[in-house]
Length: 96
Image (cartoon, rainbow, N blue to C red; front, side, top):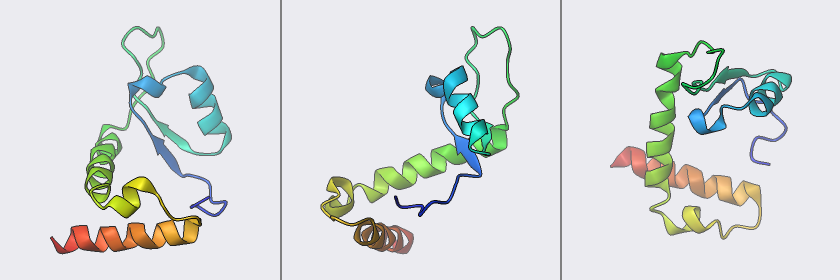
């Protein structure tokens, strides 16, 4: 696992992941849930919209990182080597 046993502090996801099972599992892991509720739900959860907007930044980063074939296809056999190439791709993206 790339996180090395570290648990998430916050889980940000879109409305497709708005289910009681997912929300309960995230909360059981001790993380904060930032998942907007679907409009048809009877009980609406409060959503931290400024934090939710960070999801867009992460998605755009991965879209650009996947332009590097070695990151997109994940040829590396170990998590350490994959993470090294993700770092190289991140540096290349920052230098553009």
